[in-house]
Image: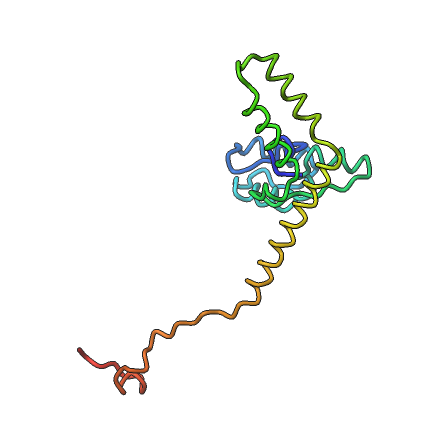
Length: 171
């Protein structure tokens, strides 16, 4: 699953720095989290931060968990790892090629026609393509991890002897 906002909606809003003290206190009370009434806003937010992970849940994750489904999320800005992007690309190509009058009914028909052309075999090809892209990315990542660091010595060997003994030569 990608990180689109509609896939990332939270079950509840957890207070942040933009909330007033009273809203933060209400949230802490609703969770039975102890705090002193005279706490500063920053102290209240420290308490929120301490317990945030227990309440920071996405709606779609809760639904998936109730169905015993584990969701995998794509890394941000990596649409090339999402086969549905290839489907959208194909549908947009069909629309661009065949849409002549831009009437709603015709566009809807073209969308349905384009969608029906995405066969299970095409979907499998898209998935296989994404898998090969992912493998290439992992290979590149491994190559980068194994590169020796490039170190440029700023102390040139052709300098004066005084540089070698640590003293500074006046120019």
